[in-house]
Image (cartoon, rainbow, N blue to C red; front, top):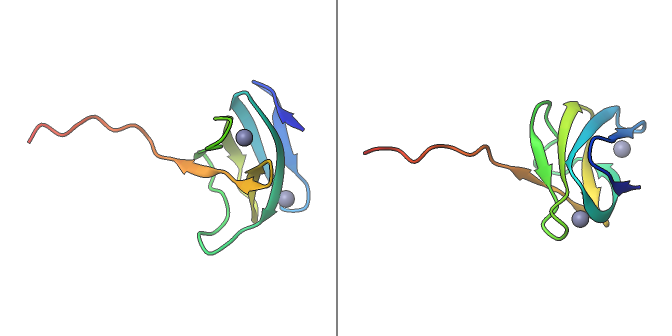
Length: 83
Ligand SMILES: [Zn+2]
Ligand SMILES: [Zn+2]
């Protein structure tokens, strides 16, 4: 399914759930977790191509993909250190 803001993406095979926090043009799917492990609860994942962003609301055993490519963990923005 294409990512629509506020929509939930549920992965029944891997038991994971995601909330779309930014819409994108790509098609969402999922695959088995690789060496980096499954998606983690409370983390955001972003598509490098269409910039769709998903929040993991339930951790499972898989990773979310956009147009077949695994979405990358979106690092939390940190304030620049003052030293
Ligand atoms: Zn899955
Ligand atoms: Zn995408």
